[in-house]
Image (tube, rainbow, N blue to C red; front, side, top):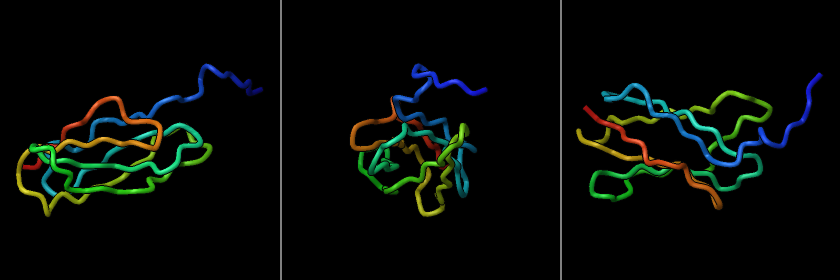
Length: 102
């Protein structure tokens, strides 16, 4: 029997560290977003803080306890450090994560 427990409802965006890292060609980011969130996007910034990529309307897997995944093609970016964050209209991932392009 499955019991509903309000304490287990996700209340924030969770993003895992991307892999592989350092990156040669592409990297995968796993994330989870709370129910009912609209306009969820992934933003990537270079080391100067300039946004170099945005992916709008990230998908949320319905009825899944696993994380969603997005694969980023990093072949068009120069070697260096990049940062990413996942955010919605009312939430933002707790930390900026680092992508190292080799």
